[in-house]
Amino acid sequence: IDWGLRGGETLRLGRGRRLEILHLPGHTLGHIGLWDERSRTLILIDAVLYDGIYDRAGNRLIPPRYYDARAYAATIRSVRAMQPDVLLAAHFPVMEGSQAIRWLDASLEFTRDMQTTVDRGIDKGLTELAELTRFADACLGPYPESMNELGASVRAHASVPRVG
Image (cartoon, rainbow, N blue to C red; front, top):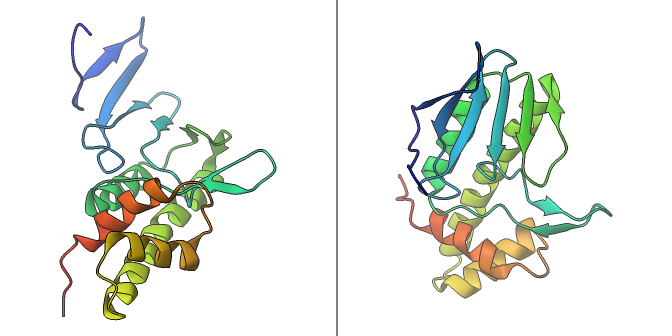
């Protein structure tokens, strides 16, 4: 690696072609994406993961994995505000226009559902990560082979201070 990217940089790809590097934390702390203003194309990679990753038959396999619930939700809100015409995310087909916005909205809704689920689990007296993760899987899954990934997101929500 010759140089690192943090967000805010611009890659010049020839005459008039630029890609803006975006800092998109949440999935990982240093996650980045690319924004092409000219075509209004946003390349998210794994920065946003809907309600999970599906196999070709449509079965949900892997939950959205993120390590900072607040940053992940903020990333979703910020990329939604960009109103991309084309959205490219790893593990998902190309999305355009209103389809992309609906996908981002559903991704944000998943974070709300996860927070509600984790809070309910804690209210029921579930204090161990493993039991909270099983509870989240029962409520939001199933994610048959991905409890570790689900546990990361559960932990991210369990660490969010509760108000009230």
